[in-house]
Image (tube, rainbow, N blue to C red):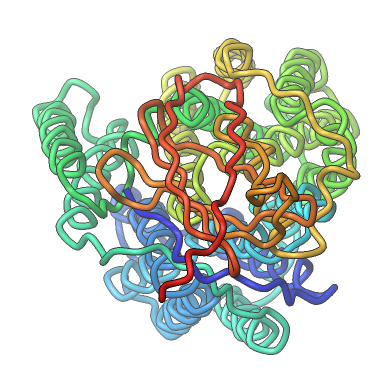
Length: 579
């Protein structure tokens, strides 16, 4: 397991930090959605077959899935701002490669490089946790988490407009320009987090996870082309299981793994990640179905006959509503907690899809569906990082949120494969062209509803935590920030550091040491001597406390691993003066 250094970080974020980080997230989402308006034209544009053209999208998905947890871990070790800028720089390079080519292989290379930018989302969330006061953190993380949907929603009409009226390469020039702006703003506005994890980068773990993810996601994205029962598809799935099991066994034996599987296996983290897959599925279904429904000719009897640009504008409220739910989420979460807001979000998504089954007869009806689903997905997406942040040690924020973002990506990948298969199998053949049917659209919405129902079931099993009053969550100084972070998690030790005569000791360093002798956390006591430290798992610990003018203290304590805090007051002895 990895842990924080003993150096206390300082908070130096300005008011522009959150908007700049959210803008970086939106730029990443724009890059992902860039080619959606020209998907059907890619075989002609690149002079290749439809099956080969899909690699332009698949390559971005695979590289994003691989890069997300790796960049999160590198950010924890070497600086989140540094890795954020690196991710954006690789994206800009990839966009320029794609902008200068009409050939398939260079385009795939460029799109693969662009996928590396997906690491920006967990890195931005990690920077926010390290620097922002508690009262701003909830809404800031919500905005960053929703930025992937916001950027996607806003990019659809913009990309459609560009693709319809100019050369399609202009899409990549625009993405590169946005990336350069995001890098410049990050350099000017966002300070580096001084919080670091101890240990080294787990290169074998990164290679093993990369291989396992590629072997798993490749048959998901290409299964409909290869055949779901083909030897290639089944062989890759079997290989993915073998590689990921071996990778997991290796990670469990390392002191500084890429992904701390013991933390990941804790109920709150595991259920949140599984729920994230379901939210990812529900998010992508609407993005696949509504644009096709809107652009199908009205001669089909159910198509709405809209242009590419109008279709993009009708779906754009999905992203805009996600952006506006960030402040709503912050208020709901402050009062009821992120678990409740996740449940509310999933319920709103379920209502949106159920209502959408009967709202497919006019363009304005699809706008209503987009708004409803955007509100629900915005609430759900905003809740996920808060649940993760409250359940992992501060030094693992980047890697843990990277893994959570990966779970959402897996959800969208599964959604893309399943809905693609449904629409293909229910399509009508008209003159050799497969035309999606209304039956296929409705089955897709029902699948999304079922995914939301599974997500709801998982959310109800998440541990319920009562939110604390705002006055208790203020973090105007670093010791208050550490205290607030640990208290929010509730699972851990809390108490007061006292002198020999019972007076409170402020700014005493309290270190949590696990049974292997490794540091599991550290904090400074507040002005009234109070401290709180979250524990990564149940077991025996030692609480070591020290302060100037007092002797050191080591106190053994055991935690059962449940959500109840264990109260332990630490009485420091007087300083021993040697003759």
